Length: 223
Image (cartoon, rainbow, N blue to C red; front, side):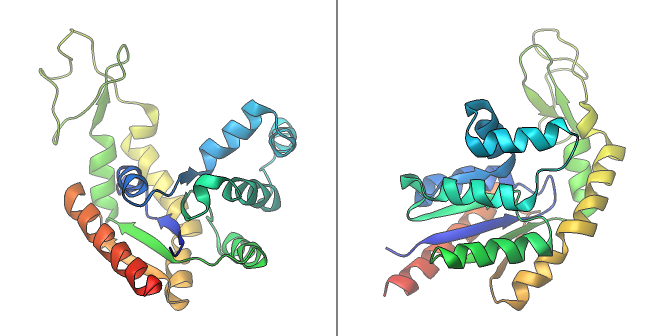
């Protein structure tokens, strides 16, 4: 069976997390979110995790070569033998070049970069409309999934808007995305690896489109 070595791209709020969970179940490949991977390595006190912690303790960014070494270690696990779904890395052209070179050194090549895209105004509306019950963690949306009563949950708890969900915070995150990560769209497009999916569609439709595309590719490669 051919590998499905995938990168997930898209702005915050486009639905990457929802689709990653479904694709992991569909194709049996692990969703590797680099933030989660880094936290797990630090918690487990692995050699690379402690190295990353040392940089963070000094207030420095974890260097690309450390992140890539962690990724290669993670990709050597049995559950990643048939592929992976990488989320959160690369974020820049330089990181993409380094990752591609290291994968080739290990006889692996990217199958595709999956772009789940949505306009800024859609992202801002999606994220800034979230409200959370601080007691239970239950998340509502003022428009798409409103609470039982305005501003309150069924248990009477007052719903709050997290700092990360405020419109001004989302706009800053989008500015960083457009400046640093969006250039990867053209980068992977030029390599013939980019597949675009409309993140404004309902999640079930987005999932069906991605699943059909990947199933076709896997059949073609296995033929």
